[in-house]
Structures are given as C-alpha cells and as structure tokens.
Amino acid sequence: MDQKLFSPIKIGTLTLRNRTVRSATHEGLADESGFYTAALTNILRQLAEGGVGLLISGHAFVSPEGRAGRFQAAADRDECIEHWKPALDAVHRAGGAIALQLAHAGGNAADPASAIGPSPYAASPNRPECREMTEDEIHALTKKFADAATRAKRAGFDAVQIHAAHGYLLSEFLSGSYNRRRDFYGETLANRSRFLLEVYDAVRKAVGPEFPILVKINSNDFTDDGLSTEECVAVCRKLEARGIDAIELSGGLPIAPSEYVPVRKAGEPPYYMAAATKLNAALSIPIILVGGIGRFETACHLLNSNHCDLVSFSRPLIREPGLIARWQNSGDRTPAKCIRCNGCFRPILLGRGFRCIKESRSEM
Image (tube, rainbow, N blue to C red):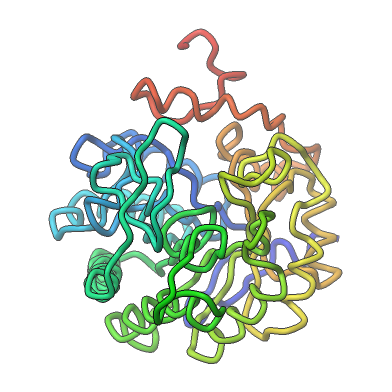
C-alpha cells in the first residue's frame, strides 16, 4: 500500500526521496528585515529530518511593496543569500530537498499605502483600495521575480515555486473577481494569465533549462467571476507547454465563502481531489495535491488511484514535523494529530512564529 508514497520521484532534474511535500506555510519566523533566523532554520531542519521529500518555504516576497507581514521572509535582495545557507545546509544534510516560494501579496500587502493589484479593490472593509498597476510596473515586477529566482539558485535551493494561488498578486490577475482591467492583462483568460506566463518565462530564462520551477495555483477560486477548474486546466496546459516542471493544486480566495477559503477548518476528503484528477489526466508533468490530507490511507489512495503524483501537507506538519517518518519507519500510521483548529497561526501575530497551540499551551 505504501510503496508508491515512499518511492522516489523526479520533478524535472530533481530526484526526491519520496512523494511527500511540505506545502509552503508562512512560518512568521524571519526577522524584521526578512532574513532567515536560527528558529526558522531549526523548523526546516526538523521537517527534513522528519522525512518530508520536498520542503517548500513559506512565501518570500520578491519586492518590498509585496510583503504580506512583519515576520515574512524576503527574497528581494542579495543579502538574503547568506541567511538562507544555514537552512539549506541543514535540509540537505538530512536528505531533503527545498524550494523557495516566490510571492507578492498584491492588494493584500501589509502596507495599504503601497499595495498594488490588477484593479483597485479593498482587501478588507477598513482598508483603502489598492492601486492598479501600470503595464510598466508589471514588466518591472516580472524582472523582480526572475531576480529572486536567480538568488535562490545561487544560494543552493533545489527549485523555486511561483505563488499564483490564494488571492496573492498573480492569483488576483488570474481571477475575474479582482481583475477588471480592459487592457492586455484583463478580460479574457488569455490576458488574465499573461502576467503569470511572463513571470514563468522570465524565471526560466534567469535560471536556465535544468533548474526546476513549480507553480502553486488555484483549482477554483470559489467566487463569482473567479478562476474555474476548466480555466485552471487551460492555464496549466500553457505552463506545461512552456516547460514548467510541476503544478501544486490548491484553491480558494480570502473573499470566498468560509467553507472555501484557502485555510479551511474542515478535514477530509481532500478538498481539490476532483480537480486534481482532471488536471492529472490533462498533463504529463507531476501534479501535487494539498488540502485536507491527514490520513496515511488517504495519501496512498490519492497516489495509487492516479489522482495526483505527490501529496502535500501544511498544518499537519506544524503539529508533527516528523509525521512522514512516523508513517514510514515506526509502524504508527494513525492519522495526523492536527485537528485543523487554525490556532497555529495566532502566535505569528505576537512575533513568536507558527506553532501548534495544542502542543504548547504553556507558552501562550
């Protein structure tokens, strides 16, 4: 039953030791400058030692106005490289692989005064509308994604992932719920996907043909005028034709109904399984599925039934960094201990970084 889950797989030129992925999760453990800290390095080391095949870092901002919060990691300047290296060394010593997720928060940026998006909108009722980007700004930001990817490769990351999900900037451009432009970057799906495709092309040119590039994308926005599953498949076909190495499938926007927001409280069955099945049938590159996976049997079923090629975890690995090793080595294949209460993200607001409050109530 477990043969496929714990078997190696290739993403482009990168061979992973198994088919498990730590989905990008905002750790809230960078310092005020956005540099990696010893605490963040320790978390990544624990995950690698815990058996995860591919770690994807918490989102790293590629430009200052795209920063989502105070303790978010940076990827916007060369000084980041020296702070990444201890974490990369720790992950590699433990036999893991690690990708840097490249992101821009768009209209959800921490500083409302500098927030930008495809069209003006307010991310919350008490915020002003973000400013609509000009085409020159789109082109300049495309280069910043490429520059950040170059830094990741120089530092020793094994891959990069472009964040185009969950209502961040590239997701906003894809979604008619946010994108009301009437120019080269709006209206039709071909235009709404143009920014993402240009970012991919620039990143590929910067890192070369052998360096793995992944994208995280919504299977469905679950909003009026939002990206549909059929549109997601169409965009991913274009990415595959251009040479993308793998797709991680997620879903939801902050403005979606509560049962469809990106971080749900519901458990299994996996949230986006039906969409993953469609995408896996349409593409030949590896498909990674995240969302609502917390049982060993479910992970095996997803792979053995060809719903996806890799399974991705976020909150379960906050409570149990060693979950994968437990399943693989100890004989204990009981479900993940995470109950999806979402309390793990509250400590970030206090500057303590994410942690499972069920495991650490004495510190709260």
